[in-house]
Length: 142
Image (tube, rainbow, N blue to C red):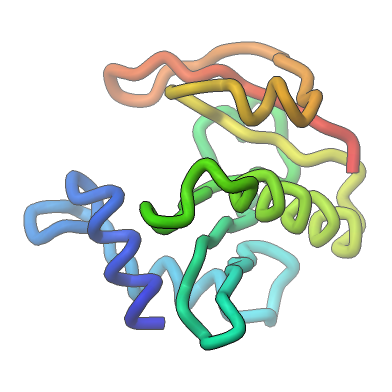
């Protein structure tokens, strides 16, 4: 889990860094606890056990007040592994996990490049704001 914590802190220093309000260790611990359906954390490793990427399923995310259900969050691929299809594999793994948990749809909020969601044929269902960012909201059937 130390690798995941470090990756979270590196990717989102404004939230998980020394001055941030979040705790990567606490958030990841909650996602790894299978007592409840959500949250859940999925991760991908090399055969040697090196972390490649991670994604979480949560009930609460920007936009979940508009569209309750399972939300894909914290999609993160280690920098040396980016642009190799890992993000798509993680998203599809999260979609399958949401289906296994009984959800008929998976949602996502995204402020950056929407290419992955467009490529995987997610439906744009709206927009919302989080802080000073405008987020596109997506949905896909599981």
